[in-house]
Amino acid sequence: MLPFRQGPVMTQIRLIGFDADDTLWQNETFFRLTQDRFEALLADYAAPDHLHERLITAERRNVGQYGFGVKGFVLSMIETAIEVTEGRVPATVIAELMAAGREMLAHPIHLLPHAREAVQLAADRGARVVLITKGDLLDQERKLAQSGLGDLFHAVEIVSDKRAEVYARLFQRHGVTGADAMMLGNSLKSDVLPVIETGGWGVHVPHALTWALEHAEAPLDHPRFAELPDLSGLADLLARLDP
Image (tube, rainbow, N blue to C red):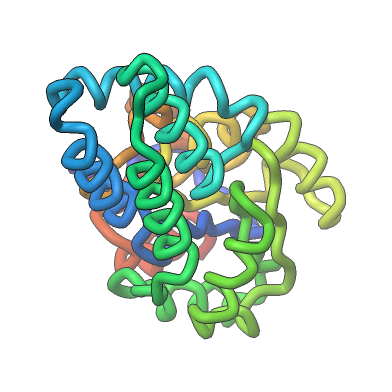
């Protein structure tokens, strides 16, 4: 894994954006644990692989209506449970799935390694530091408050989706263009590719687990793509791009 893809040096990075879930703190781990619980509850009706495929299909179908986050995930689990049992799913199973969702929404935040140091470094360099995340508003606000990182950000942007036009409007609102911006995140689809499309730097910081709907191919030959093993590599990357 290369920490930096050689390309033209940027003379000034005026905005540094950070994704939240699975970039600054753990998130997908808790979804996977809940999915295991879902599969165990419905083991008498379908095999785990089949349940997994049906759940992904439901999430893909529903994300446009329910959005990203725990609530949409729980609704998709309930919908899948009704489908695979042909409407015979016990009320106790529905209750357990709802309880699992409430547990996810109350789970303590676990910062990922080097998260605080990376955000502090970005702030110390004088760039505008912005948290850019998608998902349920209340849940994301809760996680940010528990993270202890809130005071390090100049702004927090909780968006319904991460597309190039969303980033372009966001950058404009903060007084920069894509060419002045860098975004760090674990999702190639949401954090890297659309930012590169605006003319900015997309920095991939992989997480061990990635939601199926976030999979995409890395633009390895693009001059404004970089990949870091973890957030500890940000200082070296910025030194190379914005000395």
